[in-house]
Length: 318
Image 1 (cartoon, rainbow, N blue to C red):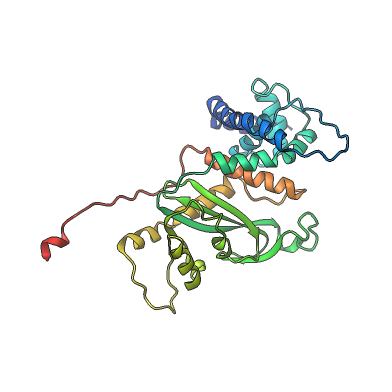
Image 2 (image 1 turned 60 degrees about the vertical axis):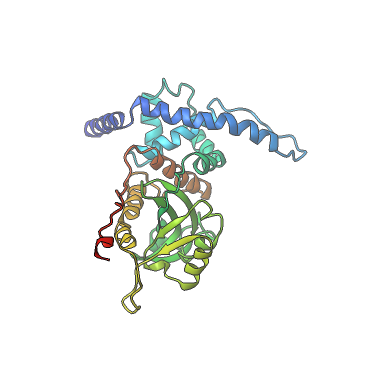
């Protein structure tokens, strides 16, 4: 018992050093500013069903619940119960004085999935710079051995294959710019082809310039479709394909595609967007979107440095 207590204290000290009070204030103020606009707009557009329902306000505001959910994905604690009971209620009682019970907090998390998703879509996405990278990563719902036993995602999740083998769950497709900022994301079933989301207009609505992808996105029809939309899809070539003329700029940036692999790794190992402890689909979506928001608040993101220099070297030999 003494060892567990000392270990818990050391973990909490590490978290207290990692998430500063200034960072907590910054995240809360950004979310609260959004909620001040979102909540009145939502009340105006609500439609009455004609039935009397209880509409009692919670002692915790929407911005507080969303902020705590995002802070959990910025911390090193792997279970929300330990984070809420031993960190929020004991060490953040000044920042969040009116905390509810743990069971009630889980219910409020799932009920606030709409403001969480809208905040991610409207406030956390970066701007396209003309250099974009796209990739997908598997989000496993459970181990392969427990597929038949899983009831939470029955009829929702599916079996798919990635470079690491077969898995049961979903795919997270993300687009980033050269600064490491998320430009957009979409969640699909595991058996959906990586090229399918690119055929949707909304997914590439704000993307322009060059889009760099791996060999899984090779398609003549897709390349032609995106070219008509003003987007240049750049992929590697397979061993059985003919060589394709490619500029030196595209060759260099295609080699820098590992930056999106690093971001996918950070989303899993730091922001915790993948685990097998979900008890409902709403809880799964809430934590997945919260992990993306937590990544957007990271001060240092994986990025690439790419500069072009105008030269007249070729003109001298003409």
